[in-house]
Length: 260
Ligand code: KIV
Image (cartoon, rainbow, N blue to C red; front, side):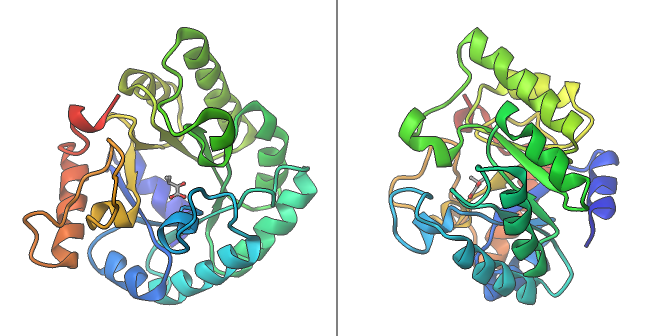
């Protein structure tokens, strides 16, 4: 699937369903059960590799997992791959070289974390045919600076996030992940932008939702507040994923208990 098809779904007012995915078997199951976007997230550093953060994940590892997911999805899903920590922050050329590896591996879009500091890079990539998804709010690659806690709760930080979102869109980003921010702020950003927002711990008013697959499957030891175990009451993995898709499309998930 290519970007225009994905954006057409959002333009029709359909909520986009996104899940992280790191291998071919799950890629096939997720596609078969109605997930729109597979995110090869650098969260694999925690879920697959057992690290405490996403920081040790390398570009080689992201390339390997993106190839596996692309084989499993067999052209039937839109694939977003995370640029890992240290592989894109130096300058736009470094980001282009890393993105080219992920796109050649089968990604349809790359995701990077950061606001104003990433604007030049986003413009550089998008002008060269690489679709970019921004990521604001809680940015796990900055955990050493912020900790794992909700972001943009004070007025000045909320204003900064709003400005960053506008700047990323103006630079050419075509999707924006909003993580762990007040639902009311996510709603304002979503109304202001023309590009779809994808929330995780950002309330129900975003244009789509993303969860870490292991959180949805109830495999996470200490799940974050915004996660929901969709295996509860489901009779297999496929039905848990279909329940997630139905709950997101209907606006039932996330509820206030999953939001800030
Ligand atoms: O890597 C990841 O799983 C992510 C999601 C939390 C959005 O970036």
